[in-house]
Each structure stands twice: as structure tokens, then as C-alpha cells.
Image (cartoon, rainbow, N blue to C red):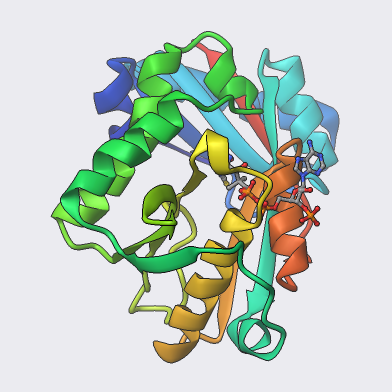
Length: 249
Ligand SMILES: CC(C)(COP(=O)(O)OP(=O)(O)OC[C@H]1O[C@@H](n2cnc3c(N)ncnc32)[C@H](O)[C@@H]1OP(=O)(O)O)[C@@H](O)C(=O)NCCC(=O)NCCS
């Protein structure tokens, strides 16, 4: 079991956020699970943290119950999904009429932030207890960071020349796949349900294919039906479920 501070979230919210990782540990009993969760809380308090999160595969039932007994609540359920990039090239989907995909310019970052600001997120972590404005801005800030530090590409979809959506594409050169987190996708609220999100994911799959990346993982909250549907249409397969727990300290 390991507790670590998450600097990215800590800096932004001004709360000391930490994460507990069990590194494959499987407790033999509920009592052992509770003892481990309690130990994680003691460790986190010793580190001066205010909030803790923990992501677990849903198969880790005893650990989930141990966390619950230790006062953690279920904040979200994440569905990881995976696809071969060659599949996107094989089965092209139709894009909405007048759609054009290109690389981002700096004025797009304002449109991206506006799109997040005007969005409703089906995620309890974002909707409960935290400052919504800051939580949304955090996603927008990620796009800005990728653009300014050139961490990867940002692709933008326009419909008839007006901003419709954007997606982050990064290659993790150590594993030759995409990084496990930090990829964003946003469609302007007025453009949703027309196929823009699917077009952006498809375009990015094609780009990954050209970069020599064979397999890509992406996912969404369990109740983000439009996102899961987009991925399913593009041949992504479910990779189980991740339970996301949270606790104030
Ligand atoms: C998720 C998101 C990117 C999808 O973009 P989009 O352009 O609306 O997606 P598409 O139009 O390509 O596809 C959406 C699919 O979901 C379906 N859908 C939409 N709302 C739905 C709902 N409430 N329940 C079930 N299905 C739904 C649509 O019918 C469509 O499927 P279909 O074409 O087979 O009918 C967009 O909703 C968004 O920006 N959300 C906020 C940010 C976000 O959640 N980003 C992803 C974080 S991982």
C-alpha cells in the first residue's frame, strides 16, 4: 500500500489531495482490508493531506468494502476501453456535413474553455463538494498545458468554419501507446449528438496509427453514455470497471 500526494490537483484546488494505491494487494479478509484502509488514512494524515482518492478494479470487492468501512464513498465509476488503431482505418464512420479537422491555434483554447464551462458533467467528484468553476477550468487548463508545453497534439473540429470540438493526442514514447490519463475530449454543447465527438476520436485513432501506436485506451465515467457510445461505435472494447472512491480526512 502506498499513499502519494497528487500535486496537479493539489495546486489547483488548494486542497492537499492524495491517492492511495494497493499495488495488487488482495486482503484475505474484510478485517485485513479495513486495517489497510485505516493505515492509509493514518499515513495520509501524517503527510498533511486533506482529501484522498482511491481507484480500484471492481473485482477487488474486499478492498472496496474495506474502504467503505473506513469512510470512503463511491465518487465515480470509470469504464476503461481499448481499441486497435488499425480498426479506425478499416471502418470509417461518416462525419457531420461541413466538418473539418485541423490542428489547434491559440484562440481555440478560449473556445475549449468555454465549452467546458457550459458543460454538465455526469461525475460526482466534479459535482459534489468541489468548486465547479475550478473543476471545469482544470480540464481547459490541461488543453492549454498540452498546447503551450507541446506535450502532444490538439485536434480541433470546425463545422462550417466555427469551433465544434477538440481532442488531445499524446504518444507515451516509453510504452508506444497513449498515456493512461490526461487525454481530453470536448464538444461544444450546441454541437453535441451530431457525430463530432466520434469524428474526433476516429481522426485521433488514424493519427495514432500513423505514429506507429497500435493500441489505444480511453474511457469515461459509467454514466457518460454519449462518450461510451462514441467509443463503442469506433470499435473500442470494454476493459472492466474501475471504482473511484473518495474521502475527506
Ligand atoms: C462525450 C462527448 C464528447 C460526445 O460528443 P458528441 O459529439 O455528442 O458525440 P457523438 O454525436 O459522436 O455520439 C454520441 C452518441 O451518444 C448517443 N447519446 C447521446 N446522449 C445519450 C444519452 N443520454 N444516453 C445514451 N446515448 C446517448 C448519441 O445518440 C450518439 O450515438 P448514435 O450516433 O449511435 O446515436 C460530448 O458529449 C461532450 O463534450 N461531453 C462533455 C465532455 C466529456 O464528457 N468528455 C469526455 C470525457 S472522457
